[in-house]
Length: 508
Image 1: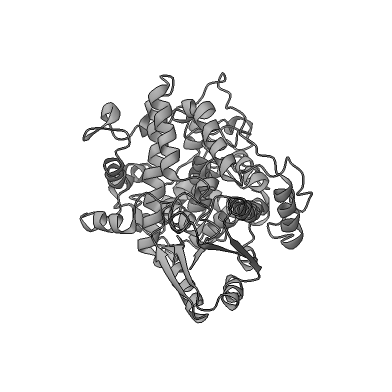
Image 2: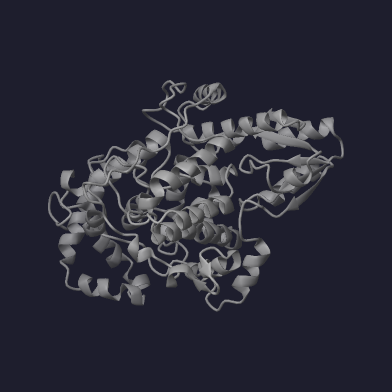
């Protein structure tokens, strides 16, 4: 018997590795995965360094670890079964669609067998979600699922009622900070020798994968890579969030400031998605802090709990139950190519320039920038959701197919109509209200047409116009369509044609 540990299941406390403490451990580092997309170098460094650190920790604890480096995962399995004919593997179910089936086929091809068990890195099991959704008349509704999870976990519950008297404090999480608010410096975990070696190897092996500067430089620079690659550092990241950023996380959760890529966000998703942290311990640490510190508002605690036990669990199961169709969903028939500046960052729009610069530098921007800037522009412009999904999957250190596909194709692109009840489309008014980007931007957020008008405005009305057949009957869109009826449609179309020409000529 061998316990197979996948690269995004780096946990010792639960699952087969905890239940079979005396069994051999197999890990496979496959280079072919890193060639599938033009991945951000920090993402590759994070994954491979975390795997190697996990290997070393297991060995230091006395576990026998077989760490096979191969071009493909199948080659790594073949070498294992050559050494251990007829072996039986135990593994937690992978989150990606079809991965368990492909894994079983590879193992059986080598005359081995595998026991695929439920993934302990999520709070809601497949069976529990399926039972819940089978009893719904409107199956995919996040708020209903979130309340179900609150009851199931007893997090922030007072008997059968929510703590504070309401389930959701989202309306209190939309404040904009005054000049006196200075977000704390984001945590930085300087690379050790192992991570430096991995970073140099990534630079040499996958050079040019994520095109353009600042990549292709000295990856051994301790200022370059900042993410936790061990459980100890992941726990330190959690402690830092609770102690320094949780108090203001809730009120300013949706705010965007120029140059403040982290704001008061937790920055825990890379560690959670690798298994270095478990969702329950993160949630319980935040709840405990809120109970012990009167300065931490309930909307900060509830906002974090909702992100983890609500949204993260919800999109995992939406992905599981709607694939493979979700990945190719495109109900609005959007067919524009993703603008090149999503890769280069070379745009005059201040909000998008700053956000893409953050993605290029560190593989990260917070969730409001992802939804209301990056996805919103692509939605308005009519970008094919598959192209946008590919970009998110490649560019973010915390991105996996199960994460990006529901968030980008459905939530950001309104691609399937599975759980999104309307498109998350917004004009420059939202950007101006929730950020400080607009005053120093060459584009005017108060103008829709004419030279210098913010592209978000004309594109917003053009989006409504060209998708009228699909969207006007949506009751949540009725008010905006009443405004569209009074708009100067010809001037808007002229401005959009100009914007598309500017984008093509690299002038936007």
